[in-house]
Length: 497
Image (cartoon, rainbow, N blue to C red):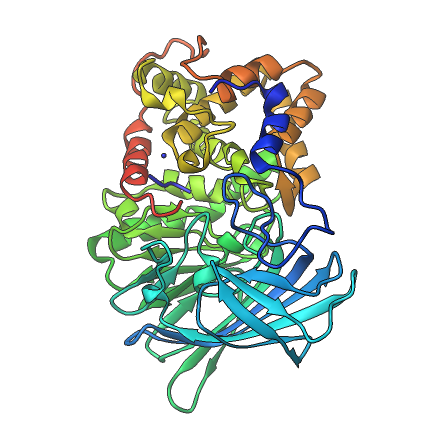
């Protein structure tokens, strides 16, 4: 996503993370309210089960911001569960475990559930949560990630959005499939992930929209947008369905937004040749009105703020978010410390699109970025490989992170470089990954020790002493102004991503 952002060797990183996380939580220690153990966000995620699917069935009224419905979670117990928890914030009316009423309480962002009978280890079970609330009023830390708009609402954000609209095991490590069904007034549209299965008209003029995301999906990548949108359906790469949606209030930006999103199938085709075939079942994008955000790589269908198209066609932001479909969505972070695997690569893929378009090679963009950031710049003090929870969206993760990718390409050559990216996708698709696992794939593919390079670029403070091989060109790449426009918007609209 485009959003606004100690010296440690790669060899020592794993043990340092374990110390940050504290003692490992075993199955015997796991209790309701205990987290999944991410050192950057220690309160998120839950232990004791593995989610297979979410069925989210809602009814939304924009005039009052009233959201009510039922989410059914199907999961498998990884230990005996006498009590367990889901991440959730909204007022809850009832909870049933495999159809039987259960005791529950909301506490510190957790829905803590006590079933009438414990759930046996290895057993598949369901949890149905009935709830109703006004999400924009739910502000546990003085902030709501649910965004109310003039004609609807938007639920999207990173790393945290799910608990404002559905109960979940809210961590990328526990992916699942999603059905999202939302009833609204007939003049409104509902956008979410995956394929639109059907629209069901109601006798009272309301309409229920039913979306399905059939590939494993991290909870923060599930989104909801309700409002007055023009929704178009077409066919994209490999004849997959494409749903694009444009808010009715985009004004003069509508033409450039459409011209940009229409490049999506072309960009997907190009990236498929480089990294392996597109990993999902549907394509498209959603463009919101207003200037409240830049963009987010919501799975199958990125969401863009209208501001990113305010100065004309912007294929680079589309390339960034579509690159995330591989780097971040298909292969997600195992913990948030590994955010470089998402943002460093998505930024680099903007550079690759520039190279493909003849507007400046990735090497030229790396050199230009390196030269324009003096050693005194703050970004050189943030470690892309371990930026800390407050800096996961730092420019260092994006820009220095992209320079690290080009340094790897320069070190191993194009043939090995693109083979590394393909193998990474083949080995980790629809799961998660760590930087250490990526380094192992890179070294195994290239047949050489790459630790010094990764230590220099990812795990050491200060500007690396490095010479990018950019040919004779020393001027500003033609793509730079558009890429810089996206970077500035990222800085202005850090909203959780």
